[in-house]
Amino acid sequence: MAEVTTAPAIKEKEPLFGKKEKKLITDPLTDNNPITIQVLGICSALAVTSLVLPSVVISVAVVFVCAFSSLFTSLLRTRIPKSIRMIVQLVIIATLVTIVEMVLKYFSYPVYRQLTIYIGLIITNCIVMGRLEAFAMANKPWRSFLDGIGNGLGYGLILVAVALVRELFGKGSLFAGSAAEMKIIGASSDYWINTAADGSWFSWYSNNNLMVLPVAAMFIIGIFIWIQRARNPELVDIS
Amino acid sequence: MESTNYVVGFTLAMTVLVALTLSSLFYGTKDKVAQNADVFNKRAILSAISAKLDQPVSAFSDEDVLALFEEKVEQKVVDMSGEEVDGIMAEKVDMAKEAKKPEEDRNLPLFIYNAGGEKVYIVSVRGSGLWDAIWGNVALQSDFTTVVGASFDHAGETPGLGAEIKDNPAFAKQFGGKKIYKDGEYVSVGVIKGGAKDLAYEVDGLSGATVTADGVDEMLYRGIKYYEPYFGKGKG
Image 1 (cartoon, each protein chain N blue to C red):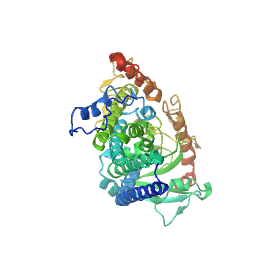
Image 2 (image 1 turned 180 degrees about the vertical axis):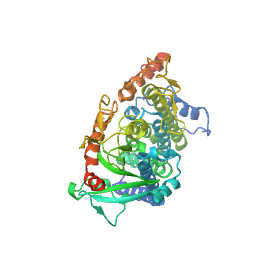
Image 3 (image 1 turned 135 degrees about the vertical axis):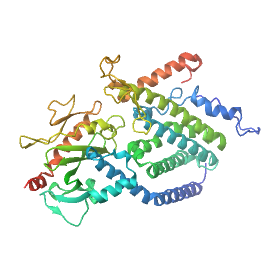
Image 4 (image 1 turned 135 degrees about the horizontal axis):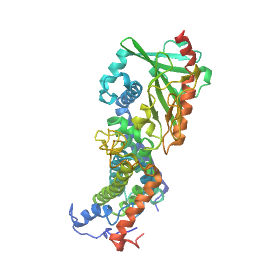
């Protein structure tokens, strides 16, 4: 794992939002992305990305859980008994995930019903625990918090990008299930591009069912990894 | 290494704190969540008869849904021999619990929608998908043969795949106008992989979700049949 930003624990002046702090947020979005570089959190990236809306909700939930579990773990880092370190981290994560679930149930029951088991699965998301072990246990609270936000965002970015491709080519729509649903291409007049219309240029087109299946996420993430490493060869040897 | 006392003390303190936080949150949100669930289930039942409503179910506010149920939906519970059971509302019947009872002891919820002298009978069915339970509501005209509409839901099918039974309106929409009796014989509505052939009695399955679609097929065949004794009485 690439730990570019781990600062040595010396008494330096720590600005609230200096260069290092900014890097904590931006690095996971690009050169230290949890999915494409660290290759963590692949399991859930395959499962939820067939539609954009659930991906967005899961991403927001992961950002929240990642940020606050890092914060609490970092606050407690000198007090957590080493022998039960991981159990404590899991309790913190599980508590936060349960809170996310309750908030969704309270404010947006239909979205909760759409995601049900996937919310619970954030507990086992390797990114969250990975960041607690690798960063929050060794860094101060504010930086850990930023690191959590950065990694949550980096995960969410890839998740939503994969979901955009899969939903568009698999279903012909975007944001299905939300108020902002867009019907892009399909075989009825509800869609912007109607493949069934007479004389349509797109009459050859039909939705690709492979995109609906979890394997499609595998290909798409693979292509993202390829593009990113082709553009920046320094990344090739990292993982 | 910390002393055992410290580890035990830390664990205890953490457990108590977490338990208190979560349980107070749970009690604080309980009533609103129960109401959300109630409205959610009633919307599902209404979406089975969306063809008879003057606006889409999503356009109704939560209060509208509850009011509409109060005014126009009659709730009955029938047993497996088609007799009405008194003293219980259909919405209180827990299909998950009923499914654990022996078949002959089950109670069946029945919602009757009255609109302008016309009655629509909404029956509830429950079965198994790929990962967990699936269930649904099927609305029938008063001839107990023609389907008005259907709605489905699930506990844990995959979003974009099996979950399409609920999330994709086009799937449920197919059921409108289908017949469950062919030449007087019960056939249910078949969910067919690769596309329906006998259009009066079958609908298309879901690509990528064969097991869930087969589950819907089985659930409908078995679940609607439970109501047959009641249909028989209704027909006279």
